[in-house]
Figure 1: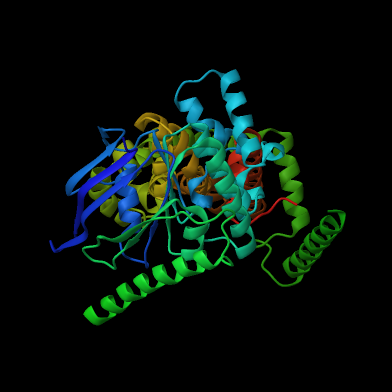
Figure 2: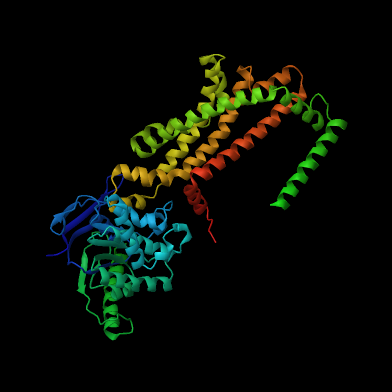
Length: 260
Length: 259
């Protein structure tokens, strides 16, 4: 049984003058429990829209989304989103501890249980010594780790990540990618990841879909990624996969340019 | 700190010296009395309690009017910020009315409420409530959407989101409004007292003109400066004590980094 099942998902937007744009057209996708699934595509193809729909922030215009065979009804604690703009996503007036504590607090856990949960997840992201700091005292990478800890503390089934490392420098990005992979392996959580970075996608994922360029985006091709561990761009299989995917994306970009 | 104190003391001293020389040698003493005479008058009026009486009259009006103006202003501002419907209806008239200074409201207030205390409070509340509403509503609307979405993912109810995300996030804006409103409240009370009161610093200043008492007028002006500074400092102090973590937020948003 799949963790996340999208069947013929369509999303239309209408602007103020009533024009309707079809952003997503008939997306079919199946993600199994514990998978690390990545959605790859050029900017503007509708990746974030699809994530917003799975998160429950937007409704579908057509089709169906099932999580563990249940339909989605708005945002829920079983799917937590990690945003790219971490400074705005975190609660700046709360300490690191209080940020991470928020989810457990909202689900009514006792103070002592909350403390245990917070400490566990702060340790997982290596921030156990920064619990009393405020977000503005942290670097971008540390803030993103707080967001990850905050999302995990609520023990969701699926982690939805919208280009979470896009705003970080290359070195921090690499470290966080490795940390994320480790966390994923340790917790066994299902991850739905969005990026435009092919290498990142190949390093992290077990399953990968390339989106066509918008509008009326569909999933162009879906791959199961079974590369050797540890994942490395130096590996020839990795490089071949990279080339294959890059060609697919270039094809889409060319198509879009022709249409314009 | 010491160096800054020295510099400001010195510049104040220089200012007083220039004032004295200009007043004695150049200006009409009826118009601009020398600082020594003003200081003497301040001392005299403090001693017989007259100064305290008028200062307290003004201060009391401001405190009460400002308090109610802020309470109503925050409530209305939050309502406007949370409801796009209310915002659509109320924002255009507010944007129009905000340009009408509380000073201009004084004659209307007297016309409607006569010469007793009500007319003063109307002016003060008017001056307070408008900036508070506008800044509060802006603060509520400026809460980042993803922050609210994050809270939704973490299981917060609509009420909890308002209480724990929307309101705290908008505090810097609300505080800006409160501070602005304090200035308008004083402006309003002085104007109202000049025209329609027999107590208060505004009255004192107007009476000084009517009775040709320039030292008293300058005493009144000096007290306005002093009260303004004192209330602003008190405001900051209370905020620091009560809202420390939001002050951190404000400092952070303006780019301050703790070393």
